[in-house]
Structures are given as structure tokens and as C-alpha cells.
Image 1 (spheres, rainbow, N blue to C red):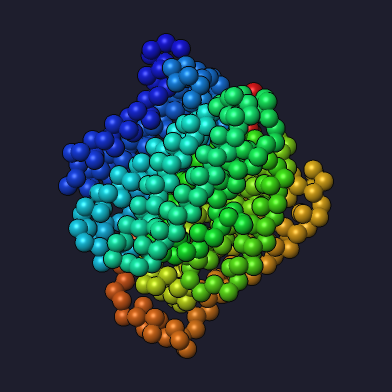
Image 2 (cartoon, rainbow, N blue to C red):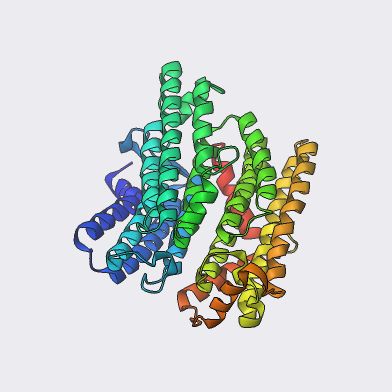
Length: 480
């Protein structure tokens, strides 16, 4: 590869790195500029990646990194999802002077700029992670992502809940990183290789690969390694919770598929996640904890396709991940727009009378997340179950269907609360507080984001050809 090809290929990551450094050293008081540069930067990165992919084919190695980074269709599509998710989070972002998630923080302008820089660092680490084909580059990119998320979870320094969330994520994340490093050491000692392709050609199932798989499952909040998710989701600011539910999961899922994990462990954890995510959310009263358990169940669905290991199942998992990200972006955009006080489920009570359009949008998103036809969530679940039945996993498919029915109960309950409010009992004070609180208009960026994602959720099942084509091309590149 020539020098020109090298510059074009690595341009997005290098450009993002330089902009982050510039913002850190010179942009302390330019919060609006940070947001603008960050958004344009990420959009430019995906445009360049698409251009490079169209000119240089679907499979090439960056020669100067000595096999540390790889680019193919799977990685390219994963990067596009990461970029779109990062741009969506920046569009969700509101000024910290109005954001309840940052209330009580001193030096709000500084924290506003810090949050924007940190989300750019998460985007950079995720882009590097999905391209990594070497255990060293995977570990460095994953640790950069984890440490940044730890800071974002604990960014509300005056909140005990945020501090607890950051501490739990840090301690359990350190344990996960230790398992990953120990697994890498065992694989290197047994094979003498540090590249993924070299190890897969020598070892198919090893203790080291089991430890690495467990470490990545922790990052995805998959049962029984999910213990951090509900507390961190609840304690972190809502915008940080939206970040935790989207960008890191895409990156970890992408690299998990590429390394060829131990399928038996993946299958067991996927089944446990689906069951636990369905049952654990039934008695929840806080919205973010419910979304945490919901995310555990959804990650179980994606891993079920990975555990099957066929071409169709991996494609179905990729489709499920994309649809899950779209639904998460839409739901968190609405939740941030509602400006809830305590993030309790009862706070959406009566939303159909206050804002009928927002109520119908949120209700349909919850129904799509439950897998009700003809919404996009049903399409993604259908592809996963079709792959399971086609591969002979009849009993597991039946268990998954039963768990999905159970999970549908709390989604339908949310829709019921939206349209059939109740104002008595221990939550009456919260309802009166919501009545007395001044209503704020939804800004234009959130309106566009909600409208675009909601359109995809409604009409994806009518014309899914584009999604099927890009996931098909991405999955093919894994076998080349």
C-alpha cells in the first residue's frame, strides 16, 4: 500500500485523534465549537470510510501497523453504526444549564466541554476496537473505552448514586480487564501468536479464549456477568446511560464475532440473559433500571445468533443489533425530552393527555422493543428465531418465545401507564410536581432524531432490502 493509500485509510482515526487533542489543549471554553467540530468530524469520518471502501475493495490490511488493524465490510458497517450512534448522542445533548442529569454540578461549562470530549474519545476507541486483529490493540482500545465510560458514569461528583455507579463499573471493569489479559497470556504461551487469525488457526477452544470471551461478555452486560448494569444505568446521567446502551455494545459485539468465541459458553449465557432480562424487569419501578434489564435480554438475542454460528444466524444477529441501536436511540431521545424528575415509570403517566404525539411514539417504540408486529423489533426477533429453528435449536427457540411473551408484559404495562394514568397513592406528589413544572419545548435536533428513528421502526418491515443487503455483505467478509 502506498503513502497516499495509507493517509486516506487511516485518516478518520488520525483526524479524530488530532481534534480530540486540540479540544483538550485549546478548546476549554469553546463548548459550542466542540459540539460542532465533533459532529462534523464524525460525519466526515464515515464519509471517508465509505469512500475508501468503494475504491480499495472490501478486504485489505494496513501494512504499516504490522497486522494490528484490519478493514473489511463487517468492520466498515460496524464503524458506520458507531459513527451514527455517536452523532445521535451529540444531537441528544442539551446544554447543561437545562439538563437535569447534570444538575448540582459545579463548573457546568467545564463539564459540558468535558462530556463532549469524552464521547469523542469513546467513538475513537470504538473505531479502533472494531478494526483490531491483534490482542494488544484490542486490549488498548477496550481499556481506553472502559476508562472513559467510568469517568462519564461518575461525572456527577455531587451525587452519591453517580459515584456509586462509577465505582462499581470501575471495580468490575478492572476484574474483566484482568481476565482478558490473563487469557491473552495463556493464548500466547500456548500458540506463540498474538494475532487473532494466527491463534484461531492453532487453537479452537482453550482456557485463554474462554477467559477472553467471559471478559467481552461482561462488557455486553450479559448474564451472569450483568451485575453492574442496573446500578450503573440508574446512577449515571441519562445521557451517559444512552451512551452505555449503544456505542460500546456495537464495538464489543463486532470484535466478539471476529475473534470466534467459545460457542458453548455463548449459548448458555445467551439463554440465561434472555430469561433473566425478561423476569428481572417485571417488578421494576425505575425506568432506567427497566431499560437495563431490557438490554440484558436483547444482548441475549444477539448472542444466540452468534452461538449458532451459521451464516444466516450471524447476519440475523447483526440485523438485531442494528435495530436495537435504532430503538434505543429513539427511546432515550424521548426520555431525555420528557425531562423526568426521578426517572420513575409512573412519571410517564398521563403523557397521552399532555403530549399525544410523544405518547404514541414512545408507546410504539416500547411495543417494537417487545417484538410486536409489524414493527422493526418483530422483524429482528423473527430472523433470530428463524435461524435457531433452521439450525435445530427447537427447545431453546421455544424457551426464547416464552421469555419474549413474559418480557412483553412489562412493555405493555408501560404503554398502559402512558394511556391510562393513575394519580393516587405514594406517587401523587410526583404527579403534582409534573403538573406544576413548566413544560419545555423539544429542540429541533431531538425532534429530527426522534422522527427519523421512529420512521425506520415503523416502515423497516415494509422494505428491509437495504438492511439485508449491507448485513449480507458484511457477514460474507468474515469468511474471506
